[in-house]
Image 1: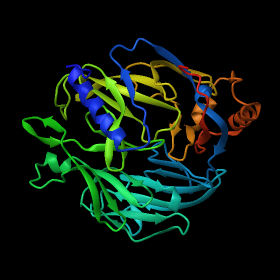
Image 2 (image 1 turned 90 degrees about the vertical axis):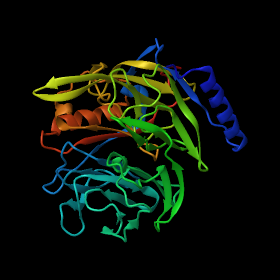
Image 3 (image 1 turned 180 degrees about the vertical axis):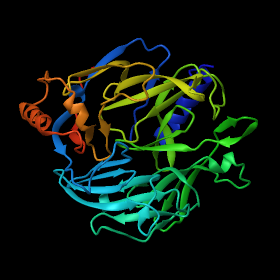
Image 4 (image 1 turned 60 degrees about the vertical axis):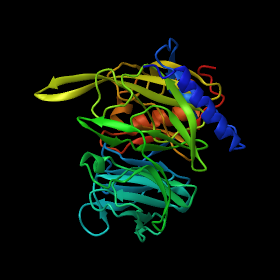
Length: 413
């Protein structure tokens, strides 16, 4: 089945025109015909990031960070890092301040399996401590370094994701678990909004179905992503990305390609395609992944899912897009040929909702880098890089490269 059928295009046109009549602010809709994309692009780190600097995260006996980082946020005067051992606070220049939260089962400790959202405007870290409670969200004050009164959830669920919405509300979506156990009264919303008191404000009901074995009562949830101007949402197993504004959704990115079935399956069939992109989005470009399920293979006696991944780059200033052929970290002097087995582009910068980009380097990556560093970066940054490389040891904490998206963006100009 082709997504780009006349009837669907008519629905899209009617839907978006209705949205424009209800909003004075024009929004751009991006279309990407991914089945017929012949253009390929070679990307360099220096093409993407500007005004950058290095931050060495201080290494002490109390601040040893492992490789499994599940929280990284760079605020104005501080850096928050979370791994399976806890949450750490560093100053804006990388000096270790304190381990704020430990993992464990004791008072004021969290499990190693949490969802985090940093609310920068109020300097609060919100935590869904999934293994401990379905009833509330923990609220940690970074400034006073203590837990505040938890935020009651309007529904007693494990969240699949959540964010602070419009500075005074929470937007979240529940996991599918209630449906998988055929709960007679499951949470009905693909996403919902509540206040900080736990009162339900608004919800978009789940209408998009999933097939799971012989059980067809599954409904998709929505993934939630902080965009440059809007919150962006997407049904978990569909592919169109939407803007969410004034309790309405309107198309933002519409991928056009052949689909294997009208209703997606929780356990995909060979050929099933799925679109994903990063948690936060910057205002200049987008990198997204089109993943195609290739079947199952036996790996040491265990069945392993095989996916074929293709990455695409979108220049948001003009809507041009292309398949990523290579990615070059021209600080490390490392060229990566993108192949279908990759589930991410190694070394590509990550976006934050405050407009920053960052790349996280572990000591061994710097030690193994070659000396032919690109002259595209400022001489001061190259001098800092050389000094860090000379003095780093294998057991040191990671190093951050922090900057902002480069404008004008010359890729796919």
